Image (cartoon, rainbow, N blue to C red; front, side, top):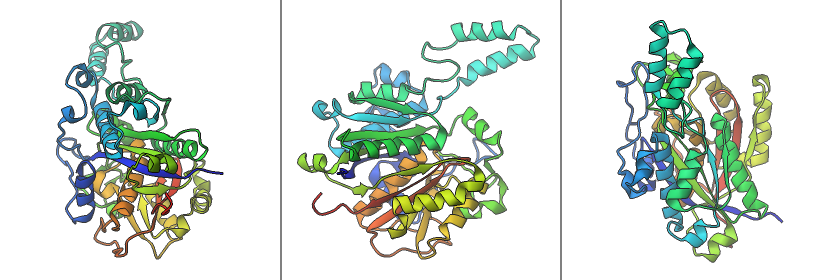
Length: 394
C-alpha cells in the first residue's frame, strides 16, 4: 500500500521577494514583475531580492566560501525547514533525507578571463597555461567551476540535515527527477521526510552565455511569456532564486503536529525526441491526473519552441486557467519545477487561485481543490504532478 506524500515546508527566494508571504503577495496583487533590463542588456533578467544572509547562514566562513547559487539554495532550504517546524530539531534533521538538483556551479570568470587574455597575447602552451591557473588561482573546491554537490554539503553543514543525500545534474530534468524521487521514496515507505530543491543564479555572465549560445534568450524590453514570440530573441528570461520543499509521509507529519500545505501525488517525468513530445505529454497528463485539476500552474521557461509545444498541449484543458510563473520569477532552471509546485501548494494552502499573471489570462475565482503542475524544460524533459487539498484523515 502506497503511503501519502504531503508538503509541510516551503522555502522560496526569487525576484518576487523572500519567503512565502512576499511571494504570495506578488502572485496575487497584480504588481509588475521585478526585471533588470540594464545590467545585462540586451537581455532582461529577474534579479534576486535583497537578502540578509545571516538570517539563515552564519557569518563565519560559511557565507564567504559560498558563491551566490549556493547561498540562495542554502537560504531557501533554511526557510523550508523553518516553515515545516523542523529547523533546529536535530532529531528530525538528523534523519532527514536530502535531494538536490544542481548544475556545475558558477565558473570563475576572472580566471577564465586571465587564461583567455594570456592566450590572446600570444602564449601558445595552452595546456601548461591552464594547469598553472588551476593550481594557483582557484580555491581547492573549484575546477574553473564548482562541484555540484557543494550545495547539499553546505545545507548539511549549516542546517544539520544529515540523512541520506543525493545530487542530480541535468538542468530542468534534474529538478524534475529530484522531486519525483523524493515523492517516490515517501510513497514507498523508504523515507519519512525529505528536503528537496535547487537554486540558480542568473546574474552571472556564464549562465546567460550558456543560454544565448543556443539562441534561447529574449532580448529588449520585457514581455509576458505569451507575447514573446513577437519579440526579439529566443523567449527565455532567466531569473535568480532558490526553492526548497519539505515533503513528508502524511502520518509522520500528523504525528508531529505539522501544518500540511497540500498533498502531492506521484510525479510523472519523461524525456525524448522532440517529435514525440505531444504523445509523451498526453501520457504524463493521464499518469499524473491533471485532467482532474481545477487549474494549471506552468513552469514554462518562455523558450519559444517549447512554449508552442506547451500551448498545444494545454488545448487539452480549454476550461482551465493556466498561470506561467516565469512571468513573475523568470526561469530558474533546476529550481523551476520545484518553484511551480511551491506556488501550487501555496494556492491550495491559502484557498485562493493564483491571480492572472498576464493581461490576457482568464481569472479563476473559485478556491482550487487540485492544481496541475506542468513543466517543459527549455530544450528537453517534461514533468507533471497534481497538488491537492489534503484528505481530512491526513
